[in-house]
Image (cartoon, rainbow, N blue to C red; front, side):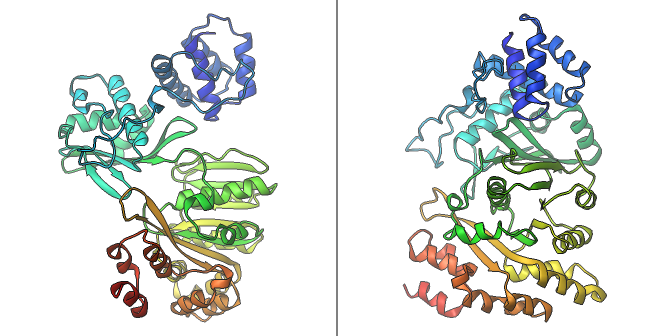
Amino acid sequence: MINEVEWFCYLGAENQFFDKNTIVELMQISPDDVDLMSFAQAVLDNGLATMESVQQLLEHAAYYANQSGPCPHSLLGGGAAEPAQAAPTQAAPPRDPGSPYPFSTQDFPDLSQAADLPMEECKELMIKFLQAARRNGSSDAHLSAEAYPFVRHFGINYLLREQAIMTPDMAKKLNLSLLSDKDRKAFEETGDLDYCYSFSRTERYRSNIMVHNDGVEGSYRIVSEGIKTLGELGFQEPAVLEKLTTYHQGLILITGPASSGKTTTLAAMVDLINKARKDHIITVEDPIEILIPSKDCNVSQRELHTGTKSFANALKAALREDPDIIILGEMRDLETIEMGLSAAETGHLVIGTLHTNSASATLDRILDVFPPDQQSQIRAMVAESLRGVICQYLVPNIDQTGLLMAPEILIGNIAVANLIKDNKTSQLTSVIEVGKKQGMVLKEDSFLRLYKEGKISAETALPHIVSDAKRREIEGA
């Protein structure tokens, strides 16, 4: 069968655009010399995938066939499919010792070429740029009009000064080159767009493009390949968090500032449930970042705007879809929070994320979103259903060569419930302090431990230390 068709089928099955067994049946009855466009039309004629999915797969199949040659994961070969490994997944070249960067910039393509290229070739240039950023260990890549391209590497931004400053036309062409016609129209109507771009199940980028004074800017979060364990993420006592995943009812909150790894921790916890239980898991995300294949559980991932209009709509529908566990990518408004609490009270395990900086601030955020006349009722609901709060920070290590986890962990118990009911969340710090045997930990103790272990500097630790006694441990060292 023609190589482009092999890539088309493999990538489509990997990304769950269509059922693997059904596409294999279509491949088996198609002529050996069927061309890509004819096969794609057959997929549409048989209702196996949407037009948008087919258009995306046509582009990807042609790209991989051109860049990587024969598809090594043919669905007709009988072997288990492996993640797509195109030429761009080769190891990054070694870093030049004289370079101002802690990574190599040798394989970043020259983006100034975009000025003279058609949109399709700009797309290939953009793909090479993002894949180079992934190979070099960056967490984010940015392309903005009237600025150097830059990447975030272990929490620090580096301007790529070997590149040309991007003209408005270059920035627009490159950032829009990844969009489908539908997404491009949505962006032109609103001036900003959130979406997730993927080359395969393991190579995904959470993306945002926007218009600012000088032109278009794109921000690309490089989603980790695979799902890490809680221990691999840096939690000192992963068993404490693993225990939270054994509950069949209640509320678990994963919080922290932007870029603190909340989605990665959420995926690790869902993966634990997916392996250990036989439940129905429904997630609502904006957008879907990490794809979670069903294992012993059935996992249904829904994306905002693509699969549902809002978190609240999806949550309302979920309650009629026989879920055991509901995952909320963000609890961002009163309606979503209220319905999430109701679901946690009525026999579901609800895991959600918030942008807050401590366990007490998390609970204040949940409670304060409600009007005063509902406060007493909501405090009772939260007190009854709360299982735990994981507030996490990612901080650069002392050598600026990696990021370390510094969490604050609150475990729901009688003392916590009573403080919530009595509207005394400011006293939760004391409960965490005395709850160390249960696995609770204060944020400042996490930073102090990392400092004492020689893993972070005093300058990194001190802004997060409130206690005078603990500050003296650092300042007097």
